[in-house]
Length: 69
Length: 191
Image 1 (tube, rainbow over the protein chains, first blue to last red):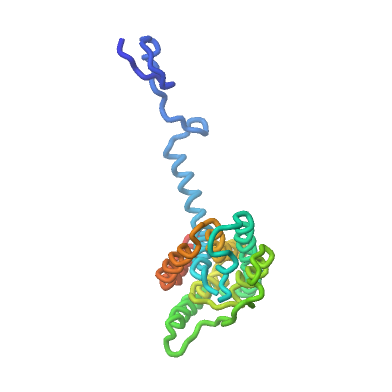
Image 2 (cartoon, helix red, strand yellow):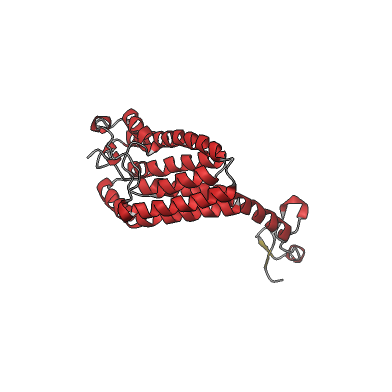
């Protein structure tokens, strides 16, 4: 039996262990579709754009003066 | 020269005190900027009854005037207090002195302003931003203004760091008003 890597990463010659498939990427929130999660994250990100833009504007304006007397 | 950079010795010697000076400086700058931010909140509230379209038009007009004034077109000049903070404040390298230097320095009202960025930011905040955004941007302004000294407090070759930082600042300074204006427009479009 060829050595195969199991889900845990350990190599073994046991055929039963070799049958263990690597699980799919675990998605939180009860297996919601990655597309839905992506849309939620994108919506939160877009909602945060104005706040980030204001913070960025303040930071850039402050940095533009740093080093002045 | 009573630059904020003189609050730190040219080479790293007293590490903990130097970092304390840097932190006190950032905190003072942030407090000073937030005090001005409170004033901008009041002005913004007074202007809030004006229709949004009118405020946008006024903001665009003022931004254009500011950008022209930065280049001293037709004798226009940026409003600023062309004054230095007294040298006695920075004579002693202590966190308390850094704090005393930083609070008026962070306001931007009692020092030289070599860039039009704060003017563009103030106009954008007063005319288009909600109160929380004004305070957030003001705090970020204070952090940005004090950040260079805090970073300097962590470096060993402070003169070399100062020269590099000065060079980067001088190269980027002319474009920062446009960058700030773009960020203000982005914030207003997405709001």
